[in-house]
Length: 274
Image (cartoon, rainbow, N blue to C red):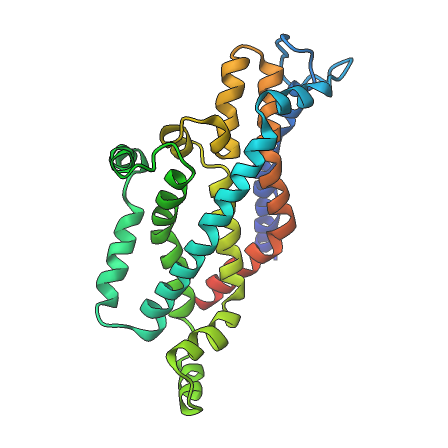
């Protein structure tokens, strides 16, 4: 009994420590953003006169209205297409067990090992030859492809653990493969699909390196591309840099707060099935 209680308190202490390690930097950045422009704050120091206008200035300098529209367009172009392709592929590999499924799975898993900095240069030259460089399409197409290894592996992990009796009963009732996929298994896969969609939305929204290398026009990039504008205008102005960082992080934090239940539900289901 004492051992179990000790383990409980040890786990709680570890969680509190990890939470503090995660939250304290955000608090520090927020407090720094409220200091007067040009100052150099030291540590956790609440300013005597908080400068809330720093957020407004950072918003205007980065032209965030245009960046919000650009990021929204890119997310809406990437996530639905990636979800459809990965769900179909995961269904075929995990549930239908098509011929060569193990080879395909190996190729997708191998894709997870490819270093991103190592393939961005070939993508750059390929897009210049295709004539899509410096367009939003230059971000959309590579992101869809780069998400496939993880997305297919994620969806395959769900479908491979589905009871075969469900599919067999549907086939007895005359269901086609399309009916089996769209009317039966897609509704049962709402949790992993929703969680995957949230993850890819956040990753797309925060995409920085790909947008920076493949798109020269700042207003055609993602929200994270605004960080380059901040650094260009305020290379040494720490409070305004922190204000811009908060504005960039705010949408993703809101998404996680609103949809954390779906993410946790999907992870729990996956761990139980595994």
